[in-house]
Image 1 (cartoon, rainbow, N blue to C red):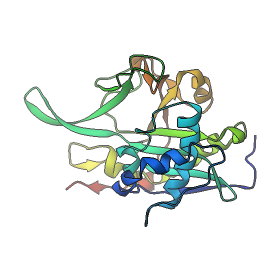
Image 2: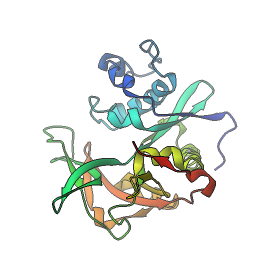
Image 3: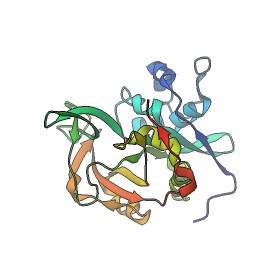
Image 4: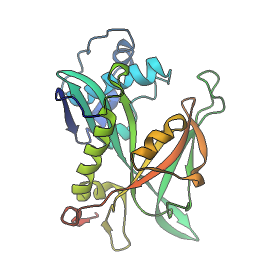
Length: 255
C-alpha cells in the first residue's frame, strides 16, 4: 500500500547522553489519552521527543511495558527515524550499533560483540525478574564475529497501522545505512588491523507473533538464537543483509 503523500520522514543522528535526563514525570504525561506533546528541557532534541511521543502510547499504554526502561543508553548512540503526518509523529524506529566489550579469550584480550537478550521469568508485567543474558557464539546465520546493526523500538500509532508506514521507515533507514557505512562502522566493529567496518548485516529482535511480517520485509528467523521474553512479550532474532555501497564504506581509524 502506498504511503500517503502527507507522511514525511525525519532522521536524527545519535543524540548523546543528554536524552537520558528526561524526567519520568514527563514520560508519564504521554500515557494519558489525547496527550499533547510536553515541553522538553532546554536544548533537548525535538526529534527524539517526537519519537518518544509514539513509543510511549504504543509500548507503555498499549503493550504495558515498563516506563522505567523506555529510554536507555542505546537511544543515546542510535540513529532514529520518525514519520510525521503533518506535525504529528506517527511512527518511529532506531538503528542500534552492536555492543562491543573487551574480554579474555585463552589468555588474550579480544574485542568481541555481545548480543544481549533481555529475559523475564513470567510472560506478564508482574513479579518479573528482568535480566540481560549476553549471547556468544555462531549460529546458522551469524558467525559470532561479524559486526551488525539492530533495528529496535519500532512503533506505529494504532490509527496509522496498515498504511505501509513501518515498511517505509525500515526501507528508508536501511537505504541510508547502506549509503553511510562509514558512519555506522565507527561504532559497530573492529578489524584486526585497527579499522572499523560494517558490511550490511542487520538484526531485529522481532515479536514472535509478527515474525511473518518481518519475513515479508526480507528478514530470516535465526533458530540458533532461540525464543526469549522482552517486557513480557516473546521475541525471536531475525536477520537481513543489505548491499553496502562501495563508495560509502570508507575507512575509519581507531584511536
